Image (cartoon, rainbow, N blue to C red):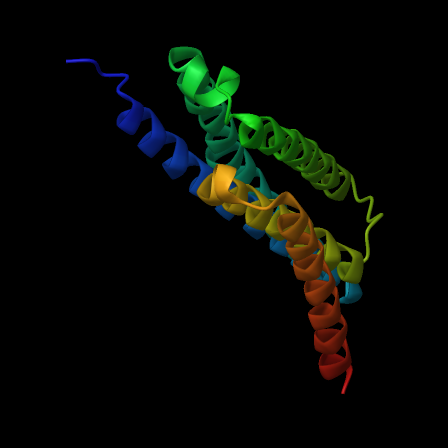
Length: 184
């Protein structure tokens, strides 16, 4: 039996994509709480920062980064094992675009790692509001990647592009509404 069957590779790839995104979504929430903890008394801020640093490190190095590595590994194995299906076939243009989004997601991943390292050093370069907005970048990447994979060749790229930007604009509007409600 071929243990690198396409369905096994796909399943493992999807499992680790879900884990990677879960980690990316939660790490930025931790950054927000870590940043907001700095408004507390000096003692409380120090205690909370210490706890957030432990949580961030564990999430990043035990879940998020290994999930990213395994996502890339199983995705690469699928492409290498079935290049005509995923990369060179006449209908593989969606994969090239998806890989562009994955590249952007890798940049996002390492920017998050830099934010985590800065927070550990006591450098709070991002406000909690900017971090909330940053958190939506991963959401947009998820929406784009899922639609590309599911719709593949049947997707009208003009409608897809308009839809992608519509989701981005909707998210920005919802963030502004949430911000106003939170202030009142």
